[in-house]
Length: 269
Image (cartoon, rainbow, N blue to C red; front, side):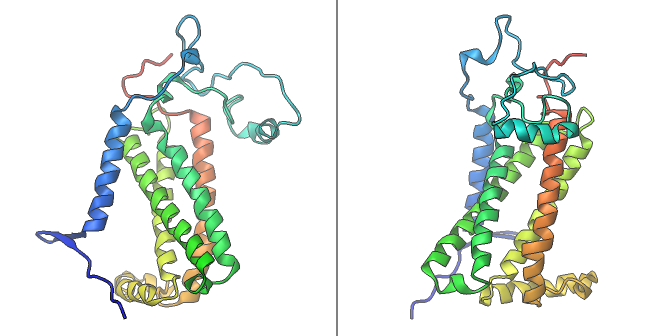
């Protein structure tokens, strides 16, 4: 029987990291740098004849009235959520000119990959907690689920880096920033319970390593990592609901207060 090759690690004093994780972090840093320096593709119609941006940089300025098509699902959805955000900002057709930068893309990429995570997780849940161990179709969707999670966290961390160095809490956006940080923390817990729900030796090893730490802070009394049923329910019900609710709150706050401008942007008023 073939055995897996031992992992390779980089050691630096008391720090130790696998070569795989170091490579992933290096790629994330490279993508982050490229997002800052690579020009964003633009079109000639992104400003009017006077060179003004297509949309004002203040969230409380509504966009021009548009012809409403009752058969358009965007208009229907916009009508339902119009009261949550300023008029014209729910699903705007135009963005400020400074959004034409790669660093603004990673928030949307995080949302897109999160949709894939949820969809692939729903497929895995249809067959239970172990069917994908013995099914080629299950292996396929489990791989999609794993790599979409990896992409979600990669895009989310790059998004976090960008907003940190942009001081994205400016302009009464502190709650937007706080909701994003909370969402990142809960996402880590969701991923952790996912590893505990694999129903294999890997999940047993992770649970065994985690139990002492959680018990030392008293969390093991209600969050038992050695209880696979409890961890599965946290992974597929409680934590995803929290992630979904916070994601919705975060998006509403972004639309309410607008996309944070660059530090050197000159804004009105």
